Length: 272
Image (cartoon, rainbow, N blue to C red; front, side):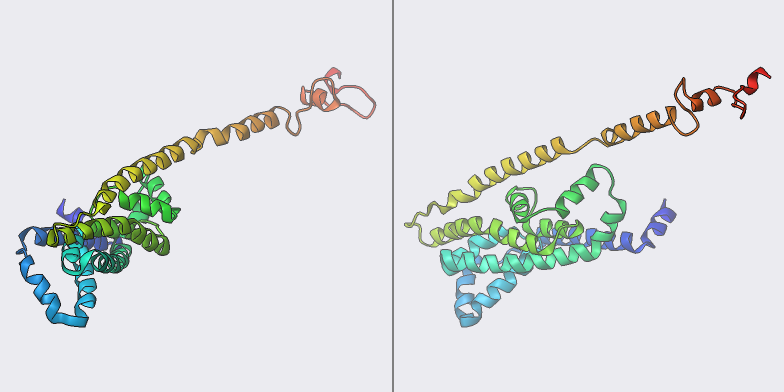
């Protein structure tokens, strides 16, 4: 068993994929054991940073998303510090950076392994990701199947294209960014009620329905493998029956194929 694992790890694609899994496991473990920051001290820290506060917010937000910290929590905190518009804008910029970086890491460490080894339904799913448009990325992003950073890493391992992935990631993040930033701002100013808070749940349900319908339609329109070979098989059978050297009964070729050859004098060699 150990020898087999060692032989597998000698393959570059397997070693890189194992490194990706190790990275994700380490990030998940660090997320569980890392100490929680003092949220009450963050507004004062932002004031001390001054004009650099937005830049730091974008960079720190991107790093936290890559570290598998939920984007929802980051957006709420940023909304409490910078307000609903500033918090949403800085979160979207951080999401763009995190999506690009996570996609690059997943493509570097996991794409070769997936391309070489997936078969069957997983291979069809990989082809579906490769053909995805911006709408497809938006649909997947809005469905709660995983955290923002985890989905970014996973997308990199598929055949998805970078530009539709980035555009779709930002578009899918925008409604929830404004909604959760408004929630964070409302925590600081409880007298202000913002109905953007209901947007994430509603859009998530719509996206789940759209994604399910797209997948069901793709499965229904997929042509079975055996249906394409039937016409060729029938044509081959006809050609075999009336192929070269096998004429129809009653013709010269058919009589010759039946067992005799006609001599120049018009007599059949079978009667000699």
